[in-house]
Length: 588
Image (cartoon, rainbow, N blue to C red; front, side):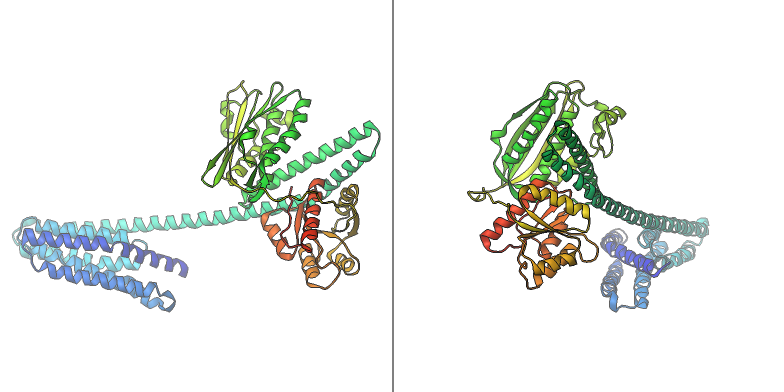
């Protein structure tokens, strides 16, 4: 047995004995009252006082030794777990001797019951530590061996006096077996806990490794996806032929689908690892919901479906919450409804209720599709699970959308539930908790980014070219750098309006390059730096802000989000003269 295990067993035995102190004192008082009243043993109060003093001494010694473990040696700890239990048992069990010698009727029976109960208590209380069990049981065993002699002297003519030897030995054997069984059970329990802890640690390591793998794959896949989306958008805007535009749109749709699947996998990985969080920022709730629903109207119309919205006027305008995650869940629900509805339409019912200082937002998305079989409802939110194989063949998908949506709803203080009657459509009920917010001051004219000179820093040529393609239609001049070192050289010699800095690069990464830029003297010391990262979590953004970055966008880069981030940091620079590290954020 290791030293750590011994220390654990010692601490457990001491804690068990201390917890049993009150029971021993109450039992002592009850025994003293009974013997005094019914047998007339007045001296029993001396016995009770002595036993109480030993209890107090044991408690004091345990506190002194085990609560000052750093200054207490192993010898003293062994003394504390053997001497007090021995003294306790010696004093308590002594009471059985005069009971067996008493002429009072049933007094010997009471003495036998006292010793038997005391022995069982010793086994239960000290079972985790063998030395304490032996020390506490030894006096009782000696008393059991003495009792037949006392009984023979008190009753010389009783034929059953010699049979007490057999009863005493039988009781000792039973207690020994019970002690051994309890010790084995405690050891099995300890082994089970150790094994469970080992498996939990292995599971946590496996989840961490899987999350790291998914994050790495996500980072690597976002590079070609960014290029596909940027190239398709540029091709669609430049080619005059209708057939070429159709092909460009096909590429864009395929790239968008890849981005959606990638985001689902990354979100699920974060949720599984407990690393997903929601932001708390003011946003226009009506505008966010309106924008999402407006995007789905033409999509549903192409499928011959109608979109009906009710209750829009009842919801507040400005709230505090996570607009991006709320729109993500609503998009998932609308996509799911459109996917399984062939005729009729989709209805969205909005409602809000004020609860103290919070706003309970409820959104119901109902469709006129075939509905969900009752047997399938329990596994509707199971990751990677589809209703049946035909759903996968006909509609595709990863089976993660609803699972992610429910977890996001719960992170936002609400929930997502589904009700359905087969043949009558399905209804998903989303609830989230928000806070009321005041409308922010909005400038009369929106900022312009046309004519800006921006340094694009990324170690991958495809990413640099993709960002350049996104910036060109906005009238932004892009200068490209492939490393943090090259970026710092350019920043020392040329003036830029802003910097798009990739966070993870070999050698000097984006955060370190930003710290060097902020610490050095130069024409771009106060230039806005926008972090470009595939890992757009709150923790990552806090690290970027601490390094001196002013905003962030997530890969694959969305043109609207990039425009918004540039516009906000430039507006802040124009207003304040320089940009602080908490100006803007944008994530996909």
